[in-house]
Image (cartoon, rainbow over all chains, first blue to last red):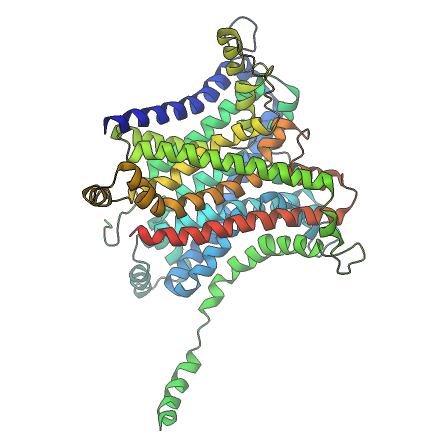
Length: 263
Length: 295
């Protein structure tokens, strides 16, 4: 048992070094912009760059739109499948797994060919249409996480009883979804929302190929032309990812545990 | 006789034919329009020539040396990063679950794994340039403190080795996240039963533990492989277009038709779907097998 523990600490130590060094190096590098001193210059330069502000705002809005559309699409569907169509679950699970199988670059390649200006639905013809197409692409990318999260959330509540109770009080479908089901799976929806945010905010391939001014292509451009600012961006991006994961852990403390454990 | 009894029953059920399936139509329509049809477009396109006729020429044209070289280096990077990711991730998960690391380490390790497995793309490339680039911290420490010049020894972050090293940053945490539940499912009784029957620790691992964990490990490998094979952003930010792996080649093709044959571009993408599809099919199949032991 003693030997086991020595090995454990060895594996853990090697792994920890591998993960800590890039983070420390990046943080250290981002502070070295001014020769001979550690300063936050790289961060101020990045934050003051109008293109940073524009692209970051664009990506935040894109993430919020993706989350809103994703929730509207996934929550009613997952609810309906649980309530009325349990046999369809494998079909839905397969569809929501597809985005992990088909690389995003292939999906966006298909968009460009299918929705170009000479097609039946010329979404890429206008800036607004392309924005919409990019948002749909992000909804697809976040589908495996969003659907899984909401479906797990629905498993913990008694969907059928809640629906019947609401119906016997005279509620229609929209009222049931918005005021009974959604509040009960709010924690699951939020988990899905935060992971969606983390995915969308730094996404590169789709935005670059659809030529939209988002944060991912901006980071790439800065990386090709500057030395210290990219390191600062990497630290900021890591902090955002960390923030999203921390929020998921935080909200999941409020999740209903088991059927019937409602208060 | 039996027909006369069955007839009224079906007469009762038929008028109540359900339209419940309409409820999932918006979702399936969305998936069809923005997931299935775009992919079908690529697949169909790779079997068509410019005139729209059926042809296998695009697929045959994939077998030219430059494209085969791109597939080959992509496959090598994906296999190497998946193998190392599985190995290191498994050892770390084992150390955490069964190896006697203090229990308080578990939660921070899992949280960090969640963060690191999602920390991919452009920022990851920047982090590794700042670490193992020519002026990276580790490169400088090794050179100044230990007298080891890794770039003099042929290492380059913009290469097979460098890309593999970078991909491990999300491959290892992903393995930890997938293997932890599998290792949690290893019962203490199995180990005790084996040792009562006189098995050495090595025999226990070879004849009990590994056969049980094998499907999970292979499945994780398949998932990591597909994960690395489809990744574009990290490689693009790290190497620009200097390293010709398949996703980068496809990226350049979509942007500027570098192959000068749009239908060859379809075939290139089709090849990617086939390879990641096979890897994921293996993953799903093996996961279903391994879940038999997770009761």
